Image (cartoon, rainbow, N blue to C red):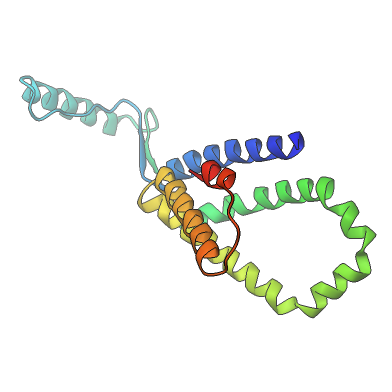
Length: 178
């Protein structure tokens, strides 16, 4: 349906934005005001070094004029900021998409939840572990590598489902996944 396509398109756009911003926060990004980079192979390296030395001594004498700071989140700091807004966005979407069907079969759904409560808890724990792992991959490598790894994982799931569990995979699905 068109609505499903729009939801998937929006999800992909939001995920790509999230990965880029996550990578910016997780990997060290030096934000410097008034600091230049030396190029060791250049002819005027000594001149640049002298200018920087003079400028740095002036900067150290003048406090609060310019600042040098480094932004580098740990995995748990990133989750601390990321998790609440993710929860709110999922709740808003859940109310719009799933609340009415859930409430129509409330008794049956609550029976499933109470019967399989341990499975729900385990899924929550594994979801938390997956979030930590994805933040670690983003911190160590990049968001692009995380997306490539996710695509490879999905391809492996389809191949395993088709070979071991004899799931039917149509030609259209193969072309769509390629």
